[in-house]
Image (cartoon, rainbow over all chains, first blue to last red; front, top):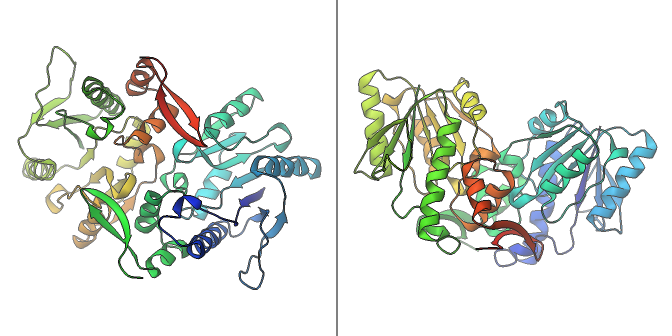
Length: 213
Length: 213
């Protein structure tokens, strides 16, 4: 199995612009990528990115593939190239899943289904396992969970949905940072704490707030 | 094991007031309660409520306990009464979890830990298993997930976190209805579809909208 992590660095996590400076958003994206790569330890990883990564700044040992395409095009190109190579199975793992652990990856890889979909919030797909890359294409954006279910069924593949709160927690919106601070214990969670953020309860709702600069 | 489901009917789901009429919110709360009770089939259930339930309207076979207390007080009163009775284990299941199934309940009940916490979004606790009710008290509201972790550790109990997207999906806010329509297949999900709601993608975000009255 090959694991591929698509990663966009430029203007990453723009929906967090009200909470974090551009430099902090960039650092958060990099820290989440590191947390994800830590969870993938022991597997063969490709990082698929259109962003130049400075090797002086980060130690990214996994193979970095550069792509000029959009997310779907880059991943479908990747699947086609894997299919031509040896058609070994592929797992696509999003880069903004700081709560995942190697346990999740091993459990998903150990399931019997041809296609395994771990949903993200709001109809998304956070991890997608594809046993036969030659018979599949991805369609991220929108209700990709439903799209991937449909694509799998249309190709006659068996499908399993992997049910995990940790895997479902992708970090896009300010309220997602609450989950990261409450449930996270990796680099991204530490970075938020080190940046002065803390969890507060306001009018019965749980939020995060910066208590010091 | 006894399972207790606290249920508030009066002005239920007030944060959905912009999406649903008061009658629809009431019906949604009742349908979600039915979905939860369906998932608990085969277990001994108490429904803990301060709301009068019309028996002509719903067929609620589980034992209905009435309480005039707030959520914490009513549940802690319940735990004390169970402790006095036979101190058998208790599982507290929230009434707004329309994506749960009996598989989740059996898995949680089958874990070895003294206390099992299934987190909800935003620091909440959606299912709480307590092996020894005499040594525990609940503290819902705010970051109850962290509070329940602390209470369990302070009492020397072993704790396990149950990691499920389905269990984490409590229905409070409009965006939660997206999860219900995409992942649900019970009464609450059907009610939304029957009420004219559908999933739409707008500016790259997934929402639900009422396409017909």
